[in-house]
Length: 152
Image 1 (cartoon, rainbow, N blue to C red):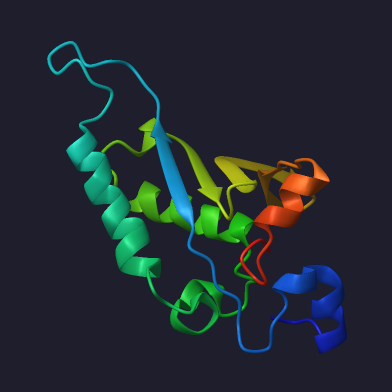
Image 2: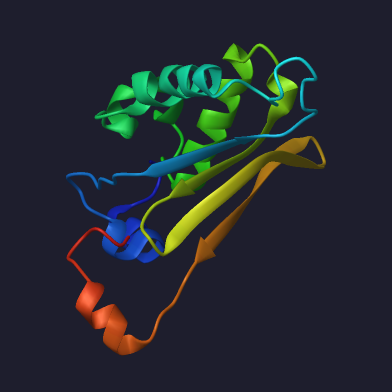
């Protein structure tokens, strides 16, 4: 949000577009903890799906993140920041937020981001730590799978 047009092109490459850039993300939420002796589960999947609906679908689905979601007004809506937003949103609504282990967002079938709530401090500043994955395949396979804007 704070970059010049030229800087946006340099940083975001083909994902830079003055009219916006969209994705159909796939999100995985992983919980981790002791298996309840009565239920035999870490968490009821119905509860997890409801939390995901509240934190993801109701807050982000079919919206322009930069314009419609206040969290991204002054923060780039990168996949890393979307993962942090989902993590923070889930932590606020889960009955047992300590069970939240990982958010994994697939931008494409080859690019994903993992966030596990890690933060570290440098001086007075706190930074989130995420992992970005990108899978590269042979060039003949890449050329048959490319499309104009969907891989960015």
